[in-house]
Image 1 (tube, rainbow, N blue to C red):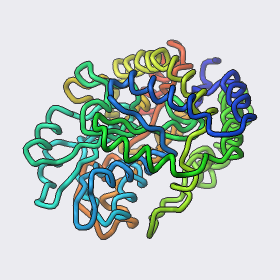
Image 2 (spheres, one colour):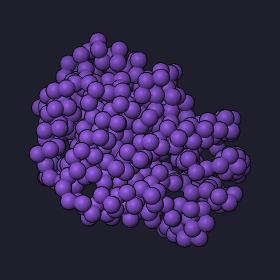
Image 3 (tube, rainbow, N blue to C red):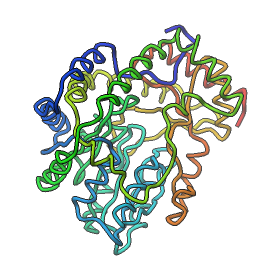
Image 4 (tube, rainbow, N blue to C red):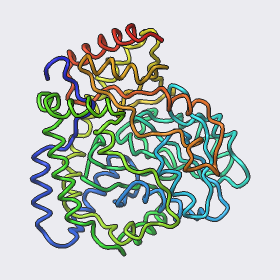
Length: 418
């Protein structure tokens, strides 16, 4: 990787896995044996008793809430800084999302804010291990036990992270994960739920198996997209093709990469029919997932080394705030998120120095128009949303790339001021 050519992202998906996917996509039928093998190996990796593959994390959350009997008039506490699809699922069950603030630099649910948001109607909490950082699960579980609240861990960005040497997803009543192309492990499309509750797992498995198979054409498109991402994020290709498009887009007030992988923030009046009708995973997804799971510790290890190097190198840069981590958290650095009051100016200054960045896809949902009837005062989430910037931390970065990024960030901060 040439110095000064640092893409914001690099996928875990490889051409070899594309060949594996193609081989299985040529088959007919569900290939239940392969899917069940992936479920067994994933639950063993996490340390849970049960794992069920589901079509998406949001549907996984919906199914978990439904299986736990959460419905009309109940309240579910979620962090204010999260992905819009998380609280969007809750009203579909007749329940109400309640937003609680985050720690300003941990970016995860603040236990004190969680406890302050509890009412007699609170039935569940969804602590999101955002950006690969585990929440303060000791405090959250203690509060939940005292108030008889179910804990559903959101592990969409944290597969493999640990809290006090226990993998996230094994610290509450249940958990969900997602395996899209931009995650630290992928199955092309799809997600997983884990739990120690046999009845919850059995109910969800029955619903999933009653549905049809995931669309083959969709999976083929995802495999082709993954291959395109693999090629496009090679530094030489990125800076000859993708980077100029980003520069032009930024001049027009747009970010074409961000727009390509984002989605419209909408709420549904009812659960979309295709969630149930195309719910079963195919063997292609499971086969790719097994290969990815075998490499996950290696890939996460590279992220951890890179993140720690950035932690140390950027700790004392004037005007810049680096992330902090709850006591006992062992993050995997799915993202390395810094704060700066002139976030957009910092991004532009870094781009001039060969470092591509992104503002990501999280929003302060406590003040988002989409959830106006559930609005809450969450100042840390509001500020983080204005100031946060994702620096590259992916496994393909070399030490000299990280050192270049650290020096570029220092110089950029000096250039733009506080």
